[in-house]
Image 1 (cartoon, rainbow, N blue to C red):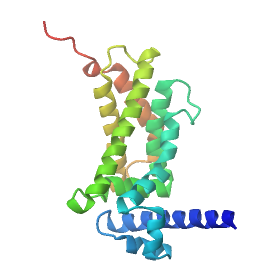
Image 2: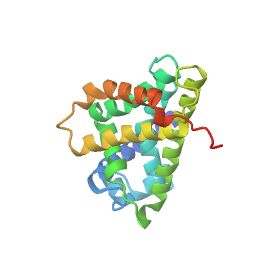
Image 3: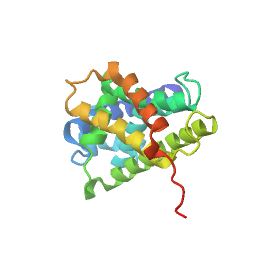
Image 4: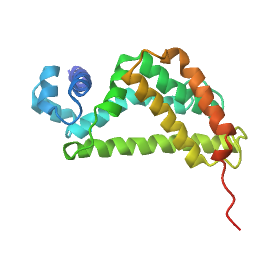
Length: 213
């Protein structure tokens, strides 16, 4: 009986997350209420609070459910060998998943186009910024590992290089979500990732500058 109760609770939680994905994607992150999400999931508003403290907590759980596989790629779940290969795999994964996985695409669209910066959304935006910081830290760690392994130049400015790399991937995804027609992102994700890794590996503008005498 206890096992069935746990299974029912997990099923309800997943239904709530599924409903939140659809509601946030259709209406943005700030306008919908927990009641809207509960209604689509077929449960009461009170049932939402059994699983989530508030809308920001639900939003964070939705991000985690969708994006955690991406975090696994950075830990070499993809089978890529070496930190630079893992960094490249991570970039390709983000673009490829956006193009091929409907849930990932909707979550990306919510994050980049439907998550308004306003007072009503303050708690959600704080969670989003925290996640962005964690993502950048993880990529910078991979970059430092690649430098230590001799895969990237010893004088590479990791902060600038990873900020540029991250921004380029997000920019490609953001533009593709606006207008997918010009690019087969699933097919091109590997080539784009290769180009970005080559950029940070070879660009003189991303090297540390010696202090002025």
